[in-house]
Image 1 (cartoon, rainbow, N blue to C red):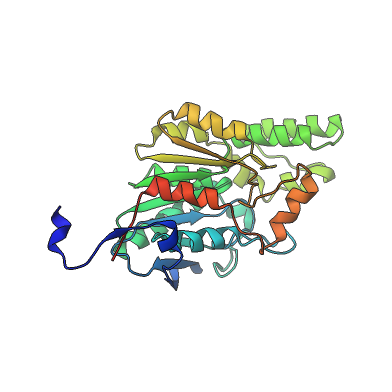
Image 2 (image 1 turned 90 degrees about the horizontal axis):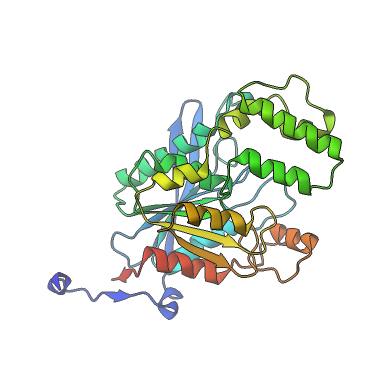
Length: 321
Protein backbone atom coordinates (compact mmCIF):
# COMPACT_ATOMS: atom_id res chain seq x y z
CA UNK A 1 0.00 0.00 0.00
CA UNK A 2 3.03 2.27 0.00
CA UNK A 3 2.14 3.97 -3.28
CA UNK A 4 -0.92 5.53 -1.64
CA UNK A 5 1.58 8.05 -0.28
CA UNK A 6 1.90 9.56 -3.75
CA UNK A 7 -0.65 12.09 -5.05
CA UNK A 8 -0.81 10.39 -8.45
CA UNK A 9 -3.46 7.83 -9.30
CA UNK A 10 -1.99 4.59 -10.62
CA UNK A 11 -4.02 2.31 -12.82
CA UNK A 12 -3.30 -0.90 -14.67
CA UNK A 13 -3.33 -0.95 -18.45
CA UNK A 14 -6.26 -2.50 -20.26
CA UNK A 15 -6.99 -2.82 -23.95
CA UNK A 16 -9.05 0.38 -23.96
CA UNK A 17 -6.39 2.32 -22.09
CA UNK A 18 -3.69 1.00 -24.40
CA UNK A 19 -5.29 2.73 -27.35
CA UNK A 20 -4.91 6.12 -25.62
CA UNK A 21 -1.23 5.95 -24.67
CA UNK A 22 1.03 8.05 -26.86
CA UNK A 23 4.78 7.69 -27.26
CA UNK A 24 7.97 9.57 -27.95
CA UNK A 25 10.30 8.32 -30.68
CA UNK A 26 13.95 9.04 -30.01
CA UNK A 27 16.81 8.40 -32.43
CA UNK A 28 19.85 7.12 -30.55
CA UNK A 29 23.32 5.87 -31.40
CA UNK A 30 26.40 4.21 -29.95
CA UNK A 31 29.81 5.23 -31.29
CA UNK A 32 32.02 2.49 -32.69
CA UNK A 33 35.48 2.55 -34.17
CA UNK A 34 34.87 3.72 -37.71
CA UNK A 35 31.16 4.32 -37.33
CA UNK A 36 28.04 4.03 -35.18
CA UNK A 37 25.23 1.71 -34.18
CA UNK A 38 21.92 3.47 -34.76
CA UNK A 39 18.56 2.72 -33.17
CA UNK A 40 15.13 4.03 -32.20
CA UNK A 41 13.78 4.19 -28.66
CA UNK A 42 9.99 4.29 -28.19
CA UNK A 43 8.95 5.60 -24.77
CA UNK A 44 5.25 5.56 -23.76
CA UNK A 45 3.67 8.66 -22.29
CA UNK A 46 2.53 8.64 -18.69
CA UNK A 47 4.62 5.70 -17.49
CA UNK A 48 7.16 6.24 -14.73
CA UNK A 49 10.23 4.02 -15.24
CA UNK A 50 8.62 1.73 -17.83
CA UNK A 51 10.02 -1.69 -18.66
CA UNK A 52 11.97 -1.72 -21.92
CA UNK A 53 12.37 -4.44 -24.53
CA UNK A 54 15.54 -4.63 -26.60
CA UNK A 55 14.37 -6.02 -29.97
CA UNK A 56 17.02 -7.94 -31.93
CA UNK A 57 16.35 -8.48 -35.63
CA UNK A 58 16.71 -11.76 -37.50
CA UNK A 59 19.30 -12.98 -39.97
CA UNK A 60 20.70 -11.20 -42.99
CA UNK A 61 20.61 -7.46 -43.72
CA UNK A 62 17.48 -6.88 -41.62
CA UNK A 63 16.99 -3.38 -40.27
CA UNK A 64 15.42 -2.08 -37.06
CA UNK A 65 11.92 -2.20 -38.58
CA UNK A 66 12.20 -5.87 -39.60
CA UNK A 67 12.81 -5.19 -43.29
CA UNK A 68 15.54 -6.73 -45.45
CA UNK A 69 17.02 -5.37 -48.64
CA UNK A 70 17.01 -8.96 -49.94
CA UNK A 71 13.21 -8.93 -50.00
CA UNK A 72 11.01 -6.88 -52.27
CA UNK A 73 8.90 -4.47 -50.24
CA UNK A 74 8.59 -4.06 -46.48
CA UNK A 75 6.74 -5.85 -43.71
CA UNK A 76 7.55 -3.45 -40.81
CA UNK A 77 7.11 -6.32 -38.35
CA UNK A 78 9.51 -5.03 -35.68
CA UNK A 79 8.28 -1.46 -36.06
CA UNK A 80 4.72 -2.68 -35.54
CA UNK A 81 5.78 -4.70 -32.51
CA UNK A 82 7.48 -1.69 -30.92
CA UNK A 83 4.47 0.52 -31.66
CA UNK A 84 2.06 -2.04 -30.18
CA UNK A 85 4.11 -2.39 -27.00
CA UNK A 86 4.20 1.38 -26.50
CA UNK A 87 0.39 1.45 -26.46
CA UNK A 88 0.52 -0.80 -23.40
CA UNK A 89 3.08 1.32 -21.58
CA UNK A 90 6.16 -0.70 -22.58
CA UNK A 91 9.24 1.02 -23.99
CA UNK A 92 11.37 -0.59 -26.68
CA UNK A 93 14.70 -0.15 -28.40
CA UNK A 94 15.32 -1.59 -31.83
CA UNK A 95 18.39 -1.01 -33.95
CA UNK A 96 20.07 -1.52 -37.30
CA UNK A 97 22.75 -4.19 -37.27
CA UNK A 98 26.28 -3.32 -38.38
CA UNK A 99 26.37 -2.57 -42.08
CA UNK A 100 22.58 -2.16 -42.27
CA UNK A 101 20.59 1.07 -42.49
CA UNK A 102 22.23 3.85 -40.50
CA UNK A 103 24.60 1.52 -38.60
CA UNK A 104 27.50 1.93 -40.97
CA UNK A 105 31.10 1.16 -40.06
CA UNK A 106 33.97 2.23 -42.27
CA UNK A 107 35.98 -0.68 -43.64
CA UNK A 108 33.53 -3.33 -42.41
CA UNK A 109 34.09 -6.56 -44.35
CA UNK A 110 31.95 -9.68 -44.36
CA UNK A 111 34.98 -11.94 -43.87
CA UNK A 112 35.79 -10.15 -40.60
CA UNK A 113 32.36 -10.62 -39.03
CA UNK A 114 31.71 -13.17 -36.29
CA UNK A 115 28.54 -14.31 -34.55
CA UNK A 116 29.78 -12.89 -31.24
CA UNK A 117 29.77 -9.39 -32.76
CA UNK A 118 25.97 -9.37 -32.69
CA UNK A 119 25.89 -10.37 -29.03
CA UNK A 120 28.44 -7.69 -28.17
CA UNK A 121 26.31 -5.08 -29.95
CA UNK A 122 23.25 -6.17 -27.95
CA UNK A 123 25.26 -5.88 -24.73
CA UNK A 124 26.37 -2.38 -25.74
CA UNK A 125 22.72 -1.36 -26.15
CA UNK A 126 21.82 -2.87 -22.77
CA UNK A 127 24.62 -0.85 -21.18
CA UNK A 128 23.25 2.24 -22.95
CA UNK A 129 19.75 1.54 -21.60
CA UNK A 130 21.07 1.14 -18.06
CA UNK A 131 23.01 4.37 -18.36
CA UNK A 132 19.77 6.00 -19.56
CA UNK A 133 18.03 4.94 -16.35
CA UNK A 134 16.20 1.77 -17.42
CA UNK A 135 16.20 -1.03 -14.86
CA UNK A 136 13.57 -3.50 -16.10
CA UNK A 137 15.25 -4.69 -19.30
CA UNK A 138 13.98 -7.52 -21.49
CA UNK A 139 15.47 -9.02 -24.65
CA UNK A 140 13.19 -10.10 -27.51
CA UNK A 141 15.23 -11.80 -30.22
CA UNK A 142 13.65 -12.75 -33.53
CA UNK A 143 14.85 -15.82 -35.46
CA UNK A 144 18.68 -15.63 -35.51
CA UNK A 145 18.26 -12.69 -33.14
CA UNK A 146 16.95 -15.14 -30.55
CA UNK A 147 20.30 -16.95 -30.49
CA UNK A 148 22.18 -13.64 -30.49
CA UNK A 149 20.06 -12.59 -27.51
CA UNK A 150 20.74 -15.89 -25.73
CA UNK A 151 24.49 -15.40 -26.09
CA UNK A 152 24.20 -11.83 -24.78
CA UNK A 153 21.91 -12.91 -21.93
CA UNK A 154 24.65 -15.14 -20.50
CA UNK A 155 26.68 -12.02 -19.76
CA UNK A 156 24.14 -9.64 -18.21
CA UNK A 157 21.21 -9.53 -15.82
CA UNK A 158 17.77 -9.31 -17.43
CA UNK A 159 14.19 -8.99 -16.24
CA UNK A 160 13.18 -11.54 -18.86
CA UNK A 161 14.03 -13.14 -22.20
CA UNK A 162 11.64 -13.60 -25.15
CA UNK A 163 12.41 -15.94 -28.04
CA UNK A 164 10.47 -15.05 -31.20
CA UNK A 165 10.59 -17.85 -33.78
CA UNK A 166 13.95 -18.94 -32.42
CA UNK A 167 15.45 -22.25 -33.52
CA UNK A 168 15.60 -24.97 -30.88
CA UNK A 169 18.58 -26.70 -32.48
CA UNK A 170 22.09 -25.73 -33.61
CA UNK A 171 22.00 -23.96 -36.97
CA UNK A 172 23.62 -26.84 -38.89
CA UNK A 173 20.66 -29.07 -38.02
CA UNK A 174 18.22 -26.40 -39.20
CA UNK A 175 20.15 -25.93 -42.46
CA UNK A 176 20.30 -29.67 -43.11
CA UNK A 177 16.52 -29.83 -42.74
CA UNK A 178 16.07 -26.86 -45.10
CA UNK A 179 18.38 -28.42 -47.69
CA UNK A 180 16.40 -31.66 -47.52
CA UNK A 181 13.06 -29.90 -47.93
CA UNK A 182 14.32 -27.45 -50.55
CA UNK A 183 13.60 -29.75 -53.48
CA UNK A 184 17.16 -29.75 -54.85
CA UNK A 185 18.91 -32.83 -56.28
CA UNK A 186 20.12 -35.38 -53.74
CA UNK A 187 23.73 -34.93 -54.87
CA UNK A 188 23.61 -31.22 -54.01
CA UNK A 189 21.97 -31.90 -50.63
CA UNK A 190 24.72 -34.41 -49.79
CA UNK A 191 27.38 -31.91 -50.82
CA UNK A 192 25.82 -29.17 -48.68
CA UNK A 193 25.84 -31.53 -45.70
CA UNK A 194 29.52 -32.31 -46.31
CA UNK A 195 30.24 -28.59 -46.38
CA UNK A 196 28.55 -28.24 -42.99
CA UNK A 197 30.58 -31.16 -41.63
CA UNK A 198 33.73 -29.38 -42.77
CA UNK A 199 32.75 -26.07 -41.20
CA UNK A 200 31.87 -27.82 -37.94
CA UNK A 201 35.52 -28.85 -37.66
CA UNK A 202 36.56 -25.20 -38.09
CA UNK A 203 37.95 -25.76 -41.57
CA UNK A 204 36.94 -23.79 -44.65
CA UNK A 205 35.80 -24.74 -48.14
CA UNK A 206 38.15 -23.27 -50.73
CA UNK A 207 35.92 -23.49 -53.82
CA UNK A 208 32.24 -24.05 -53.03
CA UNK A 209 30.01 -25.48 -55.74
CA UNK A 210 28.50 -22.60 -57.77
CA UNK A 211 24.97 -23.79 -56.90
CA UNK A 212 25.80 -23.48 -53.18
CA UNK A 213 28.04 -20.44 -53.42
CA UNK A 214 25.54 -17.93 -52.01
CA UNK A 215 25.28 -19.96 -48.80
CA UNK A 216 28.89 -21.10 -48.48
CA UNK A 217 30.80 -18.25 -50.12
CA UNK A 218 34.31 -17.95 -48.65
CA UNK A 219 33.66 -14.51 -47.15
CA UNK A 220 30.77 -15.75 -44.99
CA UNK A 221 32.36 -19.01 -43.84
CA UNK A 222 34.13 -17.50 -40.78
CA UNK A 223 30.77 -16.19 -39.56
CA UNK A 224 29.10 -19.59 -40.07
CA UNK A 225 31.94 -21.36 -38.25
CA UNK A 226 31.47 -19.04 -35.26
CA UNK A 227 27.66 -19.50 -35.46
CA UNK A 228 27.95 -23.29 -35.39
CA UNK A 229 29.55 -23.20 -31.93
CA UNK A 230 26.29 -22.28 -30.22
CA UNK A 231 23.47 -24.58 -29.14
CA UNK A 232 20.33 -22.57 -28.26
CA UNK A 233 19.05 -25.26 -25.91
CA UNK A 234 22.22 -25.27 -23.84
CA UNK A 235 22.20 -21.47 -23.59
CA UNK A 236 18.50 -21.31 -22.71
CA UNK A 237 18.96 -23.88 -19.96
CA UNK A 238 21.52 -21.63 -18.26
CA UNK A 239 19.25 -18.59 -18.08
CA UNK A 240 18.05 -17.62 -14.60
CA UNK A 241 15.49 -15.02 -15.71
CA UNK A 242 11.88 -15.69 -16.78
CA UNK A 243 11.54 -16.90 -20.37
CA UNK A 244 8.77 -16.62 -22.96
CA UNK A 245 8.89 -18.74 -26.14
CA UNK A 246 6.69 -17.49 -28.99
CA UNK A 247 6.12 -19.38 -32.22
CA UNK A 248 3.60 -19.13 -35.06
CA UNK A 249 2.12 -22.31 -36.48
CA UNK A 250 2.22 -20.89 -40.03
CA UNK A 251 5.96 -20.18 -39.89
CA UNK A 252 7.66 -21.64 -42.98
CA UNK A 253 11.19 -20.98 -41.67
CA UNK A 254 11.12 -22.18 -38.06
CA UNK A 255 8.97 -25.08 -36.91
CA UNK A 256 6.62 -25.38 -33.94
CA UNK A 257 8.77 -28.40 -33.04
CA UNK A 258 11.64 -25.99 -32.31
CA UNK A 259 9.54 -24.07 -29.78
CA UNK A 260 8.40 -27.33 -28.17
CA UNK A 261 12.02 -28.47 -27.94
CA UNK A 262 13.05 -25.23 -26.25
CA UNK A 263 10.19 -25.52 -23.77
CA UNK A 264 11.14 -29.13 -23.02
CA UNK A 265 14.70 -28.02 -22.30
CA UNK A 266 13.44 -25.12 -20.15
CA UNK A 267 10.25 -26.50 -18.52
CA UNK A 268 9.62 -23.35 -16.49
CA UNK A 269 9.53 -21.22 -19.66
CA UNK A 270 6.16 -19.91 -20.84
CA UNK A 271 5.18 -21.20 -24.29
CA UNK A 272 2.84 -19.44 -26.73
CA UNK A 273 1.95 -21.04 -30.07
CA UNK A 274 0.18 -18.36 -32.10
CA UNK A 275 -2.53 -19.62 -34.43
CA UNK A 276 -2.03 -18.68 -38.12
CA UNK A 277 1.04 -16.50 -37.43
CA UNK A 278 3.95 -16.67 -39.87
CA UNK A 279 7.65 -15.89 -39.43
CA UNK A 280 7.20 -12.09 -39.57
CA UNK A 281 4.26 -12.15 -37.10
CA UNK A 282 1.57 -11.68 -39.78
CA UNK A 283 -1.63 -13.72 -39.82
CA UNK A 284 -2.06 -15.96 -42.87
CA UNK A 285 -4.99 -18.29 -43.46
CA UNK A 286 -3.59 -20.11 -46.48
CA UNK A 287 -1.27 -23.12 -46.33
CA UNK A 288 0.27 -22.05 -49.62
CA UNK A 289 3.93 -21.04 -49.20
CA UNK A 290 3.63 -18.38 -51.90
CA UNK A 291 0.71 -16.73 -50.11
CA UNK A 292 2.66 -16.94 -46.87
CA UNK A 293 5.71 -15.30 -48.44
CA UNK A 294 3.61 -12.42 -49.79
CA UNK A 295 3.02 -11.29 -46.21
CA UNK A 296 6.78 -10.67 -45.90
CA UNK A 297 6.35 -7.68 -48.21
CA UNK A 298 3.04 -6.21 -47.07
CA UNK A 299 3.38 -3.46 -44.45
CA UNK A 300 -0.40 -2.94 -44.47
CA UNK A 301 -0.88 -6.25 -42.67
CA UNK A 302 -0.79 -5.80 -38.88
CA UNK A 303 1.11 -8.19 -36.67
CA UNK A 304 -0.86 -10.77 -34.69
CA UNK A 305 -2.52 -9.04 -31.74
CA UNK A 306 -2.49 -12.31 -29.79
CA UNK A 307 1.32 -12.25 -29.91
CA UNK A 308 1.34 -8.75 -28.44
CA UNK A 309 -0.96 -9.97 -25.66
CA UNK A 310 1.58 -12.67 -24.80
CA UNK A 311 4.16 -9.93 -24.30
CA UNK A 312 1.76 -8.02 -22.06
CA UNK A 313 0.99 -11.08 -19.92
CA UNK A 314 4.68 -11.96 -19.64
CA UNK A 315 5.90 -8.49 -18.72
CA UNK A 316 2.94 -7.84 -16.47
CA UNK A 317 0.54 -4.93 -15.93
CA UNK A 318 2.03 -1.44 -16.23
CA UNK A 319 1.09 1.36 -13.86
CA UNK A 320 0.00 4.45 -15.77
CA UNK A 321 0.38 7.83 -14.08
